[in-house]
Length: 434
Image: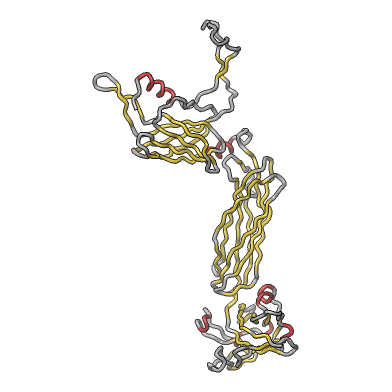
């Protein structure tokens, strides 16, 4: 591309002027074609009340790339790029990823340099330079492309500049004020979990727009952590709360998998934070943007339960009689159990037998019918081997187990050890018979 000296001078002057104010004429202009005496022509008046703004983007150019030095919003109208040569191509996108404008711009790297013979030549010099583009509060990014080289020099995130301006000028008509808040957060789930087996906790949060402006889009972020004896997945999640109107809160539900890795009382903590989705929205009240909820879970040691020792099928009917079962004493790794278990340490008063769901959720089940644990060398799961250690045989009334049509297993829970003890849990299959 070749530019004459006059054209280059005009373009250079346009490029180096970062901002300009709008002008108006004080009186009506002459009709088209009428001669005008310059001495009596109406004087142009600067419009200092012009609300137009511009992005001022400072870049450091270096070879085939550029880095951002800073981006701000200027409170003056941007210079026009009409007629700029195709040196740089500036492409804008909005916060939804849609095109928001594209135009040519002068390249700040181009300078006139004096030659040895007194002439001038155009040279390209790396270093700082400023680009100015029209302001739009919904603009998110600007790609600066070197047209001659056919490469993108830099992608500029303009959202911080928009947000910084709106924080400083919340009453500007291009900005939005909205007090977003997390008004409620609850975590629920089963209070008992078994080491190595995932359980689920449900998280319900309520987010609201307390005004004054709306509706606005919000981003809700949750982070979940566990105490040292429990893992939580996922560790975080992000969701959208679109179109939050004043006085119309939104409820968001989510679930997390909790896996115990150590026995005893553990906690799951979920922190929910709400923030505006768009940079032009100013939330000046930060104190209500976040809320934390904590859930307690009792991590139980898995045990091996042998219902009706000596029987492979475990036939069970629902009658007032008792059902015998043995909580086996095991070593670490035996039957896949991660920890060793000594049945002699069971606290008899804490024993409950029943269907898995109610037993975990509320502890609903049948107590040990004799009020004690019978220590004896019971059959192992193959139903013919006794390994010589003392197992804990318990008895529970069949009609108190909560057996329903389709029930195929019965479980046991309780506590073992000294003091408050540690929870244990295990299950075995049954076959329902008349």
